[in-house]
Image (cartoon, rainbow, N blue to C red; front, side, top):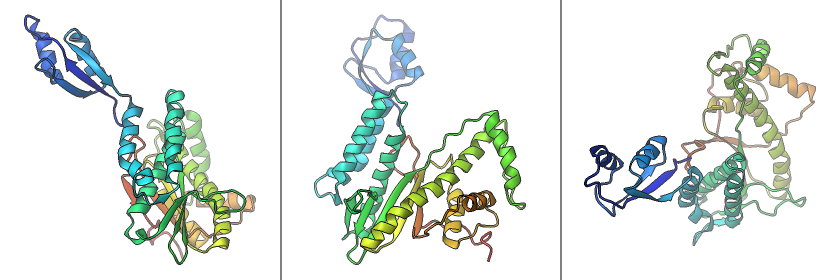
Length: 325
């Protein structure tokens, strides 16, 4: 999230004060009474303020959440509820954002998952609104489409058909413990012989592997869930389905999603897919039958501390090598 800030006003002169106090004021960017300055709320800034607290006053202090919420508002509010908004029921999504901010406040920063999910949905809404191919389309958030009350995040009426877009945030949080690394050592023997997954136990190796493994599980879980709703939606009105997976680019990478997308579309795992054999075994043991009605996958990258996305890849497919015949 954006850093917290402090707005400071100089209220007294440093004349006849020790030289180091005058130097501290200058270091803060103040040099005359009545001047205001906004600075990041850091321990260094707080230390300087304490040194010249009798010469200045803190006018306003933002929290990291305040700054983040302001950034999100500037980026997305008009798209959802501004005059001329093209997103039907955009107010519903915006209300969810405000509720998620309130939940984060109430939990003292402990419950942030819903906030991250909603901001990712906001980011996808902007993608749809900005898409030149959809300028004449009707974009609706979570419409009352399915008879059983289930919903799809975005339904875009393109005239000839619907575009169904589902947004999922994948954010595994494996701890870098000895147990996590032990799981890696047990599982790596099930990797393909031509694949070596290298991690260092001294450098968060267990967490890195655990996050990649958990992400792959989420890809399967979320895809199966979307398949059910998508099948019902396509029976009402045909159209392609797109599943957008969102992440910050650290817990899992685009290549992880490429492996999943290739398996889903081809019906077989890539030769260089480290999780292919384990996933195949899991699917067979659980007798999972994939509908394979999701037409495309997309990857939206957004550092969780900033409002704006940093990357978008659509459609997701892996490189030609490793697919096999």
